[in-house]
Amino acid sequence: MISKQELDRAFDARFDPGIKNKLQSARVAVAGLGGLGSNIAVMLARSGVGHLFLVDFDRVDTTNLNRQAYTVFHLGMNKTDAILQILNDINPYLDIKTECVRVTPENVASLFGGFPIVCEAFDKPDQKAMLVRELLTQTEAVVVSGNGMAGFNDANTIKTSKLNSRLFVCGDRTTDVGGGTGLMAPRVAVCAGHQANKVIELILK
Amino acid sequence: MVTINGENVNAAGKTVAQYIDEAGYNASRIVVERNLVILKADELSSTVLEDGDTVEILNFVGGG
Image 1 (cartoon, rainbow over the protein chains, first blue to last red):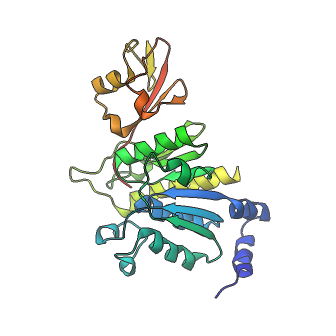
Image 2 (image 1 turned 180 degrees about the vertical axis):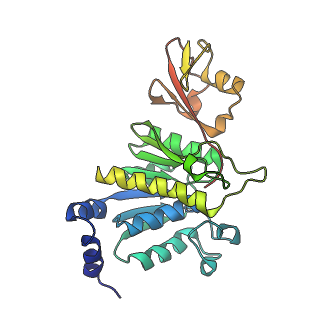
Image 3 (image 1 turned 120 degrees about the vertical axis):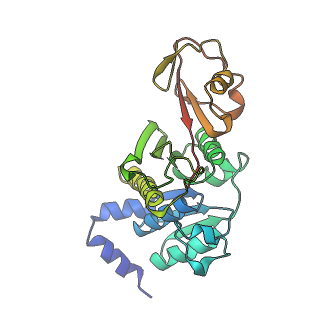
């Protein structure tokens, strides 16, 4: 297996050590490991974010394969276990913790209270609103949320907006699922990329 | 007047819950910030809008 030193050398060839150290010591939580969260987790792991906490209650099923990071190999697995395998294949030297649990207003503070940055990556709108509201009222975290990425219209309508000092929203903020509009890999990945990029910007600035 | 999502609205005297219902929002899908403070779920019906308030309503759509 590749050594940590070899992985670090590959990183050092592209960035100065200050950037690597900031990323390696960063702590980021991702709530939801579907189309947004699984792709965000992969991008943060590839970027060398050192401490990840990943939360989802669900299992991988066939309807996930059109946009989520999983493969047929992962069908039936808890998403938390499946993502752990994928991330370990990308970088086995990250500190990754998972929790297979449904997030509620009652457990938001105990799950996410210790994290300076939390990505909201749920799919149901009421759950998204609940998580953002509870994170902003119960914790000190900066929240990076995904809102509006269904369909296949112009990807340039997906953007990152700063709503206040602790809330960034990525997405087109209007395209809902339903009525014949489903989720497709490209726009979901564009939105996940916006969220992951904002996280990295927050860590490095 | 109350400034809601950047627009002047004649909503002073109403509770936040009344306004969002009349404006057609689904209360379970929104996050409301009033004068830079995020309202808890149970504060929507107890918070009365006042002249000069600035309110931001973030409406969530499905997908992730």
